[in-house]
View 1: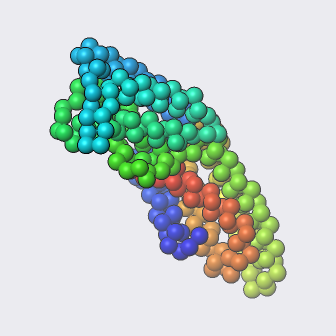
View 2: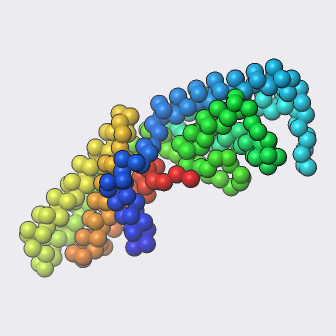
View 3: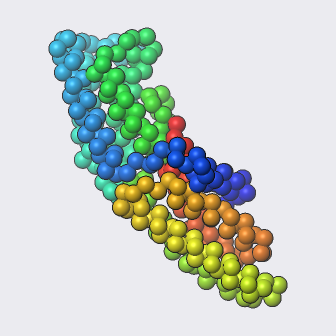
Length: 267
């Protein structure tokens, strides 16, 4: 990790681990996202019924580049919800399907805003649910660009990344201990202290992985893990062990980057 990227990770870690951590919103778990999907489905049905009661579902919306029947739009909206729900799994976040659904909703939200229309209560509720989904996938609401990419990893995917971080930490312990023993300039006490720090990183990663798999809050523990990783890398550089640590550190760096995106600030 470059010094610039290291400083970003450390700044985020300190923000998450410090006194402000209580105000940091937790990453939504898979179960919480499923509840959001159910909320969206219910809110969508209410909104659709509201349109039908006002006979607006028979309307045709004409813009500068196309015309679309509201009934056809509603069918596509309904299908987008069902497809997203069906494909959302622990090991697959269905990011593309989530974006498809969010773009359907964004078409309505943006039209209301651009035409200065006052939406009814039914749409206001649905829009709020879609905003919650956008937050879970690390995108802004409404979506205004076709270049937006979702950043979510589901619980199984994220836990797997952290497990790789644990494995890399074990390799790091072996590699740096061997290099430290070969360097006569490194005292035994310093070597043992470094070894304890690496073991602590392993324990912290294991705790974070357990929390993710068990749907427990983890933002504070993730912040502490990121901070410990950043400080450990700085210590390795100071002891002249960065080169020996490099192969294993790539696995740790990957976990740091993934966790920073998952628990960092959202749009």
